[in-house]
Length: 328
Image (cartoon, rainbow, N blue to C red; front, side, top):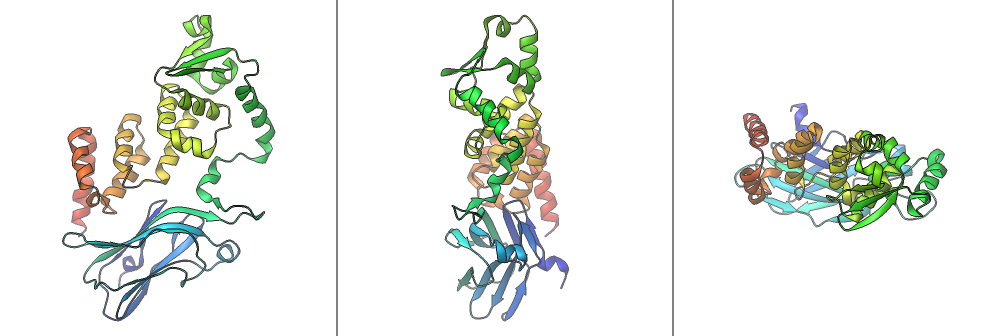
């Protein structure tokens, strides 16, 4: 049997194992695949029923800090009309070994099928006994060495200490500091360096941003944005990064949008890839739709997308579909 029979394809939060053929009584275990900090395995065992298991590879990391996982598992028939079975969502389950998640499927499956695991969250136990922490939120925490300086900078913003510029958002105003804005954005620096309205009147009009989004934008520039706030406003922050030429914010948004592509957001994100030239996100969205077969799960939304999307973007998707069909 070829090595591909054991290979699991992945995105940062999705794993798919394609089973080409399974004898009436057999056991098969996948190659390891990495999601989050851990290497994982899937296994199938077929006797009277089909048992599907998901478990991390045994290691010191698994023993000392096992994953606390939230996920959805589906088994999808890859022939005909692609019928699927879905296990109820697993929420915050500690998984240490191959007996911690077992799904017994009594519906007979013949021919090719796909085991699809969508990881909704992965957490680790807090070292001080507090609430478990999501590993996907760690990238937005600040290092200890910068903590005091960032705290002081944030205090300047939140308490309005010596603010010298007023930002007029669409539904409110907020004070900020020219020096901080100019240091973070060449567009703002140019505004304050020339005799423009922003310099003369000490105001900036940002009518395409709500006060809530503007606050999130400033919180990012001052280094005090929280992960939840970033996730809530990241598409608007991407627009602001493009408008004010803030490359680190653009990259932070791009990397974050790559991490949680799903059926509810993939088409919207695909549209944004053309607007902001996000090549990695574009290829990840197309791969998610085509290689992982999600295009079949959102047929109505995809038809609407075809009627409104950029023609070049639609062509790229169809080229990927044609290449995928060649592989069958």
